[in-house]
Length: 486
Image (cartoon, rainbow, N blue to C red):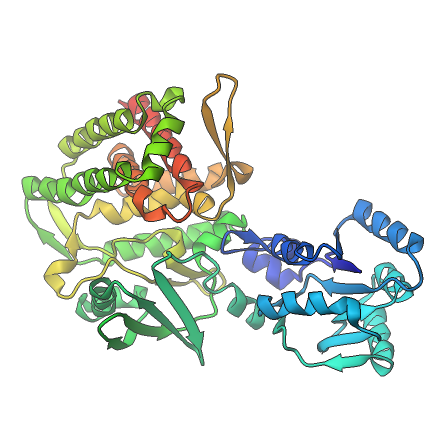
């Protein structure tokens, strides 16, 4: 039994413009490449072989493998443009395939494509076809002599823009304590953290009117003794993080994103408080939170293991304690330098994964705010939102959050961090820095506040320990940059 994953047809231009990938198999959704998801499920059955055909070399290998196989070989061909949305049923279907007696088409024909169990000769013909019209005719003829099964696997044709956007909505992984479900155009967020969900729901309803155009309205709040939830409209719009890690941005579209983000920054309500009270807010929301989170993290088994792991790194000399000491000094210096004298109604978490963004129409919506039950609760240090955005753009948080990084031993036996393809493109980083400078904002202060965010992340990602040393290494790199700026 051969599982043939056919990734030879490129994604349509409309899809490449949205997400920036040439092949559907390279799509990243919740930290996993689509090709890796399919391959892992296929290889769970030791009786099956798996092959992805995606370039000239693998195409030639596939043809050779089929030509040398027996005439009774069974081949399940899945084009990468068709994705099974019900992976459990997909897995069970693959396990049953060796017992099938006839050619079978699963879920019907999608224009010129189909997921089908075919003969060796059929598979050879399909690999040789490059014209969609010829492939459409092939499947029309095959249909007449095949069994037909319902679309129990929930196959989705990703070449359809609406279907693609619906599939990619929510592609960034959610936190382990949250659940998100979508139905009939409505997205519902559910959590056992009732106070947080209530504050997230209330936030839209208490902030000043000029800010609401940047937010996704919340409605239908429900609470019981164990959980709380609220609803939002389900927009078929990818978040900015998934576009960033697919390198979908160009200079123009990223400029559109920056325009919208800084328009949001300018639309926030401000309250004069004086420099000292603003510094108190920074100490409370930035420095004290980092210290508390580090206390929590270092008391865990994962914290102790990460401490031992990073201690060998020259940048992290002294382990977590040394990193904390350097970070504390850098943040205290930034607070002393910070001349902010206002508080702002902040979002609290405008990282790229919380920004729904459609470049063609300029749609920009922030989701998942820190939350507030009253307007007074929504006021915070005004640079916090900018540090969060920097956390994604300059710090590369979304590459780490999506597993697109490697921590490896370097020549001195210390850990080094590499983001996929270098992380955020340098031109995008430069564009953000330019915007900060144009707005009269201190890059040094914002990066020091951003530093605290990477260390504050540590106890929130205990469910995925691989990320933990990466966050520490980014924090150490930011410290190096800050010390060079001094």
